[in-house]
Image 1 (cartoon, rainbow, N blue to C red):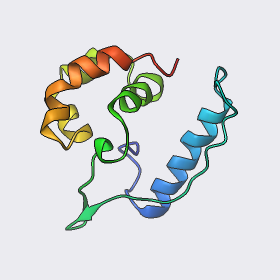
Image 2: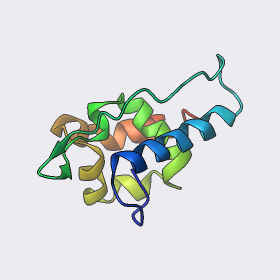
Image 3: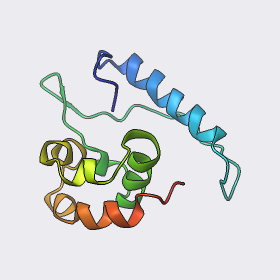
Length: 110
């Protein structure tokens, strides 16, 4: 989820991921020491376009926590926008249940 003005390259995705990881490590309240590190870019590409979605890599509860903590102000910004849902979820069952899972876990990373 690069900012729209940043070219989607492997180097830019890595830099953005490292920035998010660094920021996440400074957030207080972790139950265990925050020791996450960048491991790899698992981006799925098809015809030069990203083919993977967040639900290919993260649990639905973590998608909600990530979006609620770092990306969107309000859960309604996501669940009321079908284009945004399509950008986040690749699996139809996850799209169907996203209003419930996002609402339930939106603040779980607070």
